[in-house]
Structure formats: C-alpha cells, structure tokens
Length: 248
View 1 (tube, helix red, strand yellow):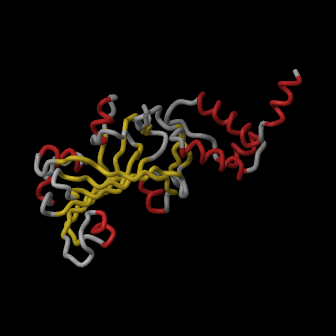
View 2 (spheres, rainbow, N blue to C red):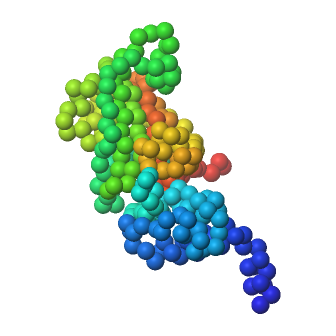
View 3 (cartoon, rainbow, N blue to C red):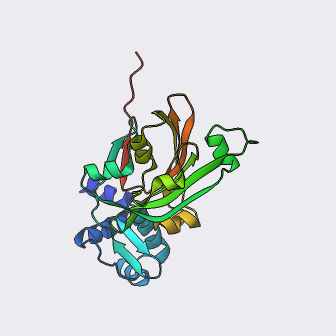
C-alpha cells in the first residue's frame, strides 16, 4: 500500500491529465470531436493552460487533429510508415506497401532561378546562372497531411513538361523511371525543427509543433547533385531507423 501511495504522489498533475485524456480518446471513434476546451478543462478540474499543453502533446503524436475554427478531433488510427534510411524509396511506395493511398495537395511547380541556398545544395557556384525546376507539395493520407516536400532539380535533368498530367508526387520515382542520369546515393541530414506559421498551416499542426526535417542531396554516378530536397514529416505517422555496424 505504501508503494502505491508513493507512486501516486510522484505523478504530476499534467501526467494525470494525460492519463485521463488518453483514456477518453481511446474510448472515442476516429473522427469524433472532443468537447470544447473550456468545458473539457472544467470537467477535468484543470486549468486551460495545462489542458492545452497536454492536448498539444497528443496532436504532435498524431492522436488528435486540430481544425482551426472548428475544434479538436480524434485522428484516424493510421498505420505508421516504418522504414530504414539505408535505402532511398519514394514515400508513395512506402505507404503503398502497408496498404495506404497517398494524395498530393497544394502542388506548386515552377521553373525559376535557383536561390543561393539551393545553389549550395546543388553544389553549384553562387555566381553562375542556375535555372531549376521547383516542385513543392503536401502529401496526405486520407484527409491527414503527413509530409511537406520540396525538390529542386536543374533543368538539365528535369523540366516542367517532363512531369505531365499524371505526376503522382514523387520526383524520385520520375527520375528512376527516366533512367538517366543513373542515381547512386543520397546524402541526408536529419534534424528536428519547430513548425512555423507556414508549415503549421500546411501540415495542420500547432505552431511550434516538432517536425522531422530531412535535407538531402541526391547524387548521380558521376558525383553531380541531381536533386536538392527539403522534406518535413509529421511525427506519429513515421518511424525511421538506421542499421549501424559495430566497429570491430
């Protein structure tokens, strides 16, 4: 009994609210709306600030979905896309492997001069002219945005006309289908980043929510950068892992 009492004492109010809210969410069906924040805070006997902090945690995990001006809803019980980072594959292929269909939203395609950051990412001198194809889009599974992708490719490798009307969202898949240039490897930086106002809106997450940011350079066999990409993934929908060798 004393052990149980001591355990209860170390449970912070926030953790207790998280337990109760988690149980409530588990009892609801996907798509059901939670009570308004003032009502829920009163029912749980906590401040709105504490409740808001706990709910934000569930949103970042992909358990809840906030729709601005409407309310907070239980997210679909979406399968997690798990993948090893040793092999580069299109997101659509990873999702399809576990029976999930992806859709492309907010697609923006343009031919324009590369920015200084993009020139550096493409391994080009800052002073040269560098016309590129920029492809930006949000990838959703069902109605849930899961990733924001931007690829920048020199026009010598890909043009807007090459994408055609059947473009499904993957620049990598298109480059692989074309077969030229031959692709060899991708150098990828992985970091966590807080969502600013732009990405909070595009990915339907709270401002400041943690996102997984991947910055990649896709190389051809002649060691030229074919594609410079910046991708944001919503945690809770992805599980990335890396197999590492033990140094003998």
